[in-house]
Amino acid sequence: MNILYKTALLLPTLLCVLPALAQPSAPPATPIDGGLSILLAAGGAYGIKKLRDQRKSNL
Image 1 (spheres, rainbow, N blue to C red):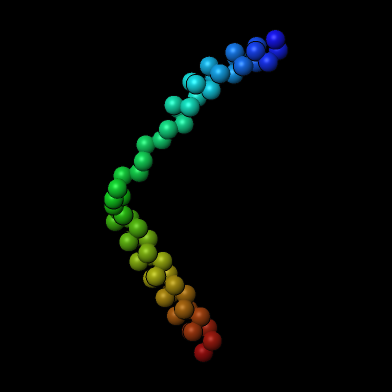
Image 2 (image 1 turned 60 degrees about the horizontal axis):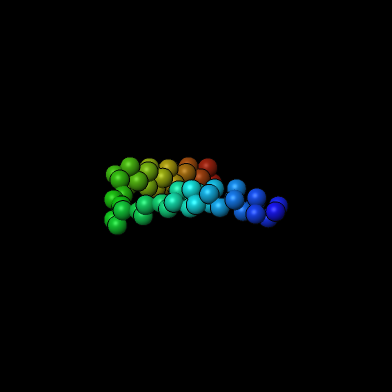
């Protein structure tokens, strides 16, 4: 009787949860925003500045 009671409580819960697990797929082509190119350019400029500062301090 105990197994029947647990099954009766568990089965409706599982049937309600399973549809909630479905997730929509990602869009086929997600565009890369212009902000990424700005961050890459800023990172490159910062790296060049650090290299120049290091070369000046070694001279």
